[in-house]
Amino acid sequence: MILLRLFCGALLLLALTAPSVRADDICVGDDEEKAAKAQVAALNKVEKTGSPAELFVAYQALAGNDCIDRYDKNAQVRAKANLPKLGRDLAKAAEAKGLFYSSEPVRADGRTSAFRYFEAMGEYPEANRVMLKAAQVKPDDMAVFKAAWTVDNGRYGPRDPKSGERQPYVLPSAYRQELEKIASANADRFMKAEEKDAQGLSGGAAEVAKATMGSLENLRKAADWMKFLPNGDKPAKVRAEQRGDTVMARPDPMFTQMNAKVYYDFADSVKAKEKAAQLDKKMDASGRAAEKSGEKLKNSITQQSEKDQKKFKDKKADLEKELGF
Image (tube, rainbow, N blue to C red; front, top):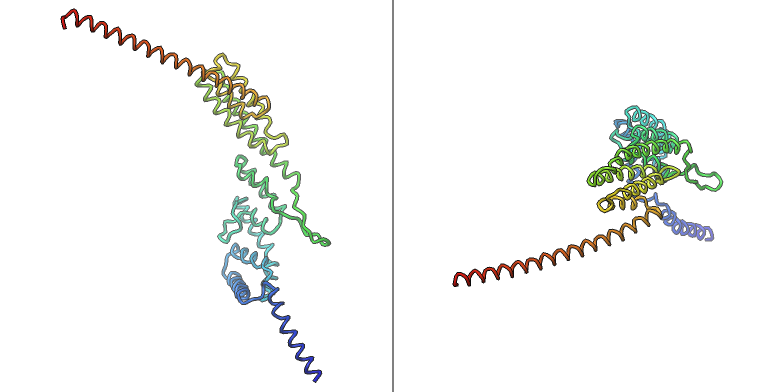
């Protein structure tokens, strides 16, 4: 009797605990099992008939799926073992084709860049190398440069065996220095181009407007690259203020002062803001004076017109009287 009670109690305990264990495991379930087995079946097919790029995508998916080992332990082991070499081979092939960097993630169509393969495998030194190569091949491509500059976003180093924590990945200083060389060269290029445009500031009023437009465009582009340098975009801002001063020193500031203001607005320094504010007041005063002069001229024309009309009527009346009308 006692044994029977113990047996029944054990069965009851199993009945109560089994569902909770199953419920706590997110990998256990009919849908999960079906999905896992389908993924393994797809891998088996790709291993037989798929391309290396397709195989990499399949291996990557299985390697990152913690539920696979519940249903097929060998598949995940195989994926993790084969993924590094396959990824390196694909990355080398992409690099040989000149596919250093692309914004798209790893794809199965064979058009994935070397950077994406290395990044997907966590081989950051190699990913940095090809990313830097991409920036050097297209030194004037700001989109590629920004991707290279922020390449460490979302990266983490190896997990600490004691704490289990992962610290953010830190880029080597040499990597940043190479990118700064690219930024500096581009900034210098635009600053030199600006010097040519600024020569027109000594011409006529129309030429000043054209020169200002070209000069400011180059200063803005130079400033965009300078933002990645230690001193920032200050050199471009300082030059803009100097150009504004040059325009204001002309003998015809009334016709060119608006060009000076756009320089000061871009310079954005304390002094430049003061100069821009003074120009605003000056232009407002000039505008009011012009409006007042226009009103006077309008009134003068109106009065003259009224006098002319009266004179005409008087002459008409005299003529009619003389003719006997």
